[in-house]
Image (cartoon, rainbow, N blue to C red; front, side, top):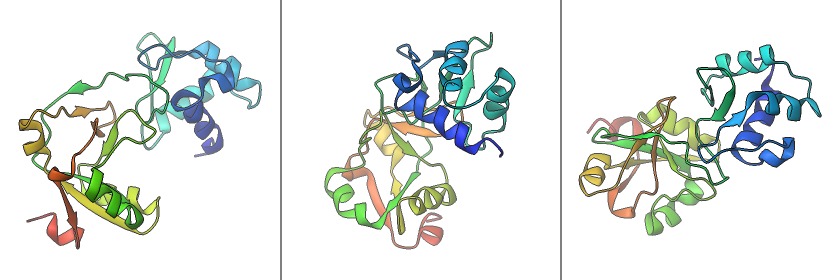
Length: 186
């Protein structure tokens, strides 16, 4: 993708620091497209066509443009307090969370917490969880007893790009997989 740096900057604005481009997010994380283009243009050349191409071609589907084309938002990963409004839904019986090996002790003690984000990000498959874990160091994968957790009253959400979200995952519902590729099938 030819707009990687620009996409990262837009992600930074819409997820973490709208003030960097003088953009205002509403309670659901929506920003005015024209205001975003104006704000980004102060430091990075951008047009509406370029913005639409970034949204259309983003492999992780980080963004949504409203049906009328006037608003844009990041789909997930916010550290600013917004509720992107994913719909609560029944999760599969098991989901997966990839992280770095250095985080195992804390997770086993406290569970998986959103840290600086609004939600914990959870994968539906081992491969994605491993990829996420690799970004943070030597990867490890936790199997989440998501079906049991949901039946116990913990809500799960599905973002527009298919990512599973939860407010937290208590240790009771976690199992560290020693060999993720074989244990995930048990």
